[in-house]
Image (cartoon, rainbow, N blue to C red; front, top):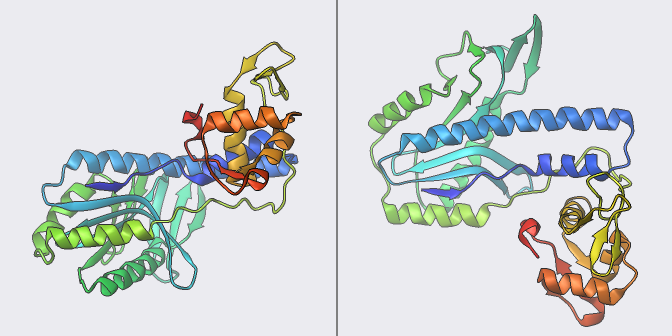
Length: 315
């Protein structure tokens, strides 16, 4: 059963908002373009793995969590691509969407990619998976349960070639996951029942806490206003945003609120709405907020409104 569904990473959303509104120099834009490309490639690989796993149709009761994020007792973040919890074992998957020849150096604990005659050292995915496994083990211990924890690195790119991989590590191309799962289901006996699975599900859902990606530039000046498709700032007149090019749009308001949530704050007041969108009237801003029907806190004079993730669906 899918209990946490993968969402578009906040890294991609924040980068897109920054590229729209950030007052950046050429080097900053170049870095953001490269970071976005890498994040999109990673997300593409993760979605490919999601589709493959959905097609497997596991017959036994299980939990699947995609893009699980949590924080340990020391305040450090754990971001896991995929978790599969069965009555026999827990499987942690690290998904890689990388082309080229991939090798693993046991002496230096490095994953090495060779592409166009260039060698690039990548972070050790097994050290990361070991850290995640220890975190999941602590959660299971708290629940008074015990299950074997398996971790594997899977490559989703058809053009990746795996060479000289150590036998003691589970590292293989995505199609090999079908055979590996079959082997693991045969090798491990059932140790917990469905009610215990429910207990694990509730604990993991309580701990799932997605975090917003922080860009590397510190404070960045951003453009205010509702932005037209022609990239000009629109003016608010008679209940609508209008551009000098003649376009009228409510989409620009939703886009602006979406960007504000990512780059400024998930909370906004009447005054902040007016300042950001260049709206002169407090009554006009109040009408927008009432129509949006956002959750709000505070008295009339100090009321603040929570911009939801799905602001695109509002008003």
